[in-house]
Image (cartoon, rainbow, N blue to C red; front, side, top):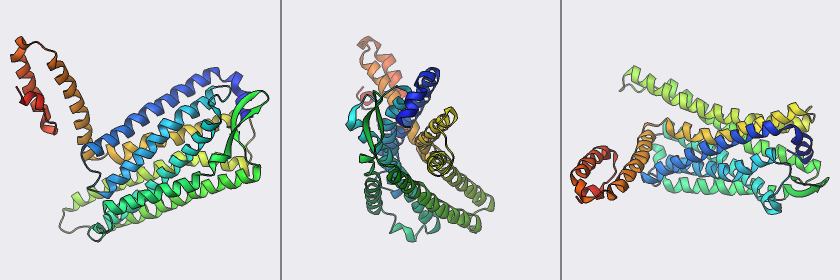
Length: 346
């Protein structure tokens, strides 16, 4: 959003500003909790060094978390405040981080699609390739490419004074901005979507054309449908969430996109939908997994048990019997994997 949009609509967007703030707050809270939960489950269960897929999911969670924490709050202020108040450094840094984490998330999604294709199509031969070491190498390449493609945005935006109002707006000329936005669309959306489409299409084709004769037909069909459903959700959510954002930018450069209330709303909605993707990724990649659901219960179960144990420490010695009962109850809950050293000392 440019400065003229901020000035023109600031007086007419008081109620809308509150609504926008609430929506951004929901995205921030859900995205932060969801991605932190993903990181906690993977790190707590010690799965970082066991499977390459876990490393990719961990990296995706980190990228999405950085995007949510550093970008969403500041982006919300652009739509709710009359001017930019965070200074030149933040003006440059926030947009750089936006595109850095965007590229990192998208490239990680593409890497995950390749990883899952190899795991499903070549389950035995891919073991030598799908190692944690190679996954870390791929993740390093993801961030290197992300830095390369996002570094121009360090000079793309600049704090300026426009008609007495301090704003954070693009500083490049029209030709360079258009070229940069087109490159972002090609390398930050079009190519990753093609990679996702090809890998997931080949994966779906393999799942639906190959049947293990050692398994029951119904079980094989159920497994295919389950995996296929997850793959379709992953690809569809990514494409749908980021497509409006890129379409709006392309329409601004190559179509008819006049500056009015309707186009302003479309611009905001495109941002909201794109940012929502960082909230949905943890759900798609983790919550649909039975193993993650177990990890989810362990994380929150141990947090609950720790609170109970802290309360036990504050009880007087005369209540020893009730404490023992409480410990037995806690030990029954600890079947998920928590160690109750406090109860064992009784």
